[in-house]
Amino acid sequence: VQLQASGGGLVQPGGSLRLSCAASGLTSDYYAIGWFRQAPGKEREWVACISSSDGATYYPDSLKGRFTISRDHAENTVFLEVNSLKLEDTARYFCAGGPLKWYGSSWCPSHGYGMDYYGKGTQVTVSS
Image 1 (cartoon, one colour):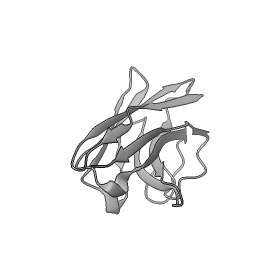
Image 2 (cartoon, helix red, strand yellow; image 1 turned 45 degrees about the vertical axis):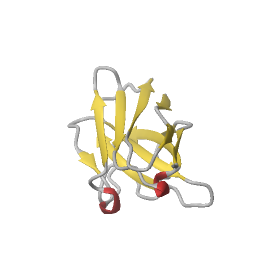
Image 3 (spheres, helix red, strand yellow; image 1 turned 90 degrees about the horizontal axis):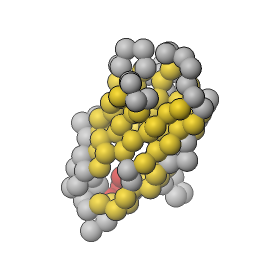
Image 4 (cartoon, rainbow, N blue to C red; image 1 turned 120 degrees about the vertical axis):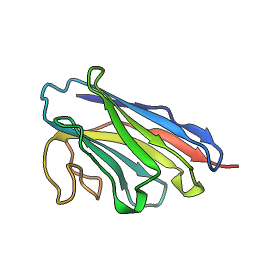
């Protein structure tokens, strides 16, 4: 299984980005894909999660409203749209996936560890 994130870059505060996560090798129809981010010196943070089986989406309360996760089931691609970007959104964003496993509030771990597959990520830098 490979997860390839793309779409990062340099963006001004208030701008938007659409990140893509192309998944290959997933043979099950029952899996979850999550987006996570990590900035240097900071803890890994869960950003969004989507279930392949019904498309249900999940977000941490602190990030609801500016982040939208979606999927193109036919293309095995999951997207993360980020609006109203802030300086503190600067981080490496990566996607991870694995079989459906409930972590208490979503199919993705809030601490960001434990899913079966992780991609290398794409850098998002918010700067004026």
